[in-house]
Length: 189
Image 1 (tube, rainbow, N blue to C red):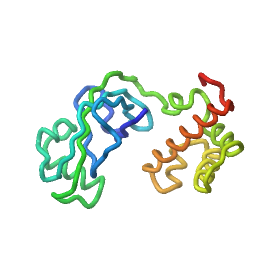
Image 2: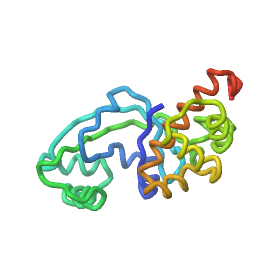
Image 3: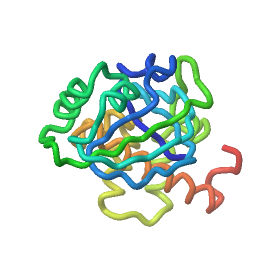
Image 4: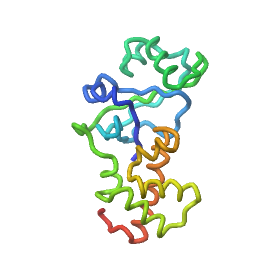
């Protein structure tokens, strides 16, 4: 399932319905109206949501209403946050507004690995993949780190930052599904 990753500080706002959008720099096309997504926050899945709307705008066209839906007091505060998170933001920069409705809350949160990989630890999946699957040199390097460290978060930090988690998770999901398809992981696990 697709997901939206948010900073830990937004957890309560999402769960209380005070934050129902996220605004990202750039034009994002991987999400569409109607998609169901997991909301990741602080390393946990805190909710399942349905994408209500995806809109593309210029920074200069953002409104106070856009800011309020994203949990900010004003358009200016939102733009300052975009500059803080992304650096070079101009009035002509493109942004994507992703509006969502929370359809299920997960209290204290769910460990993402338990949803994606059953109860199988990521280091075990990595070792199986290294032993049985054809992998690129880069995939092999990532999986070797996971097999030793056992933490997506720590490996992402070693690879240059938390933004690398998506790439690592996508690789793990792909090899997990390949291993299942090849009968190396039983169905239902």
